[in-house]
Image (cartoon, rainbow, N blue to C red):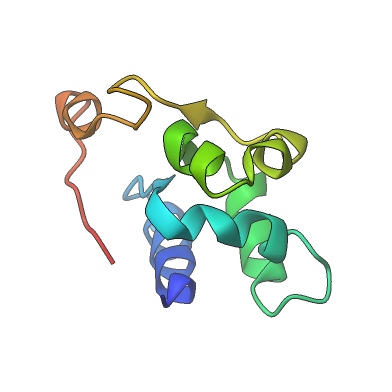
Length: 102
């Protein structure tokens, strides 16, 4: 899993006024408690994305299954589960977003 590309591209899109956002799904939810540690190599990018409100959804079902729901809540990230516990792509498409997966 190469989450650095997610962070870099979302920040780049945002900085260029292109409106990139991040939805964290699947095993990637396990990165939240890791990235939040100051010594983690993704911490600076994670903090920048978080401060810019680019992380708009973390999968509720995946966070529960992977045992990180409390860490996600502690970080103040939005847990979303409008589609059987998972974030619905259609909701983002309806808002005009294009879905890009890494």
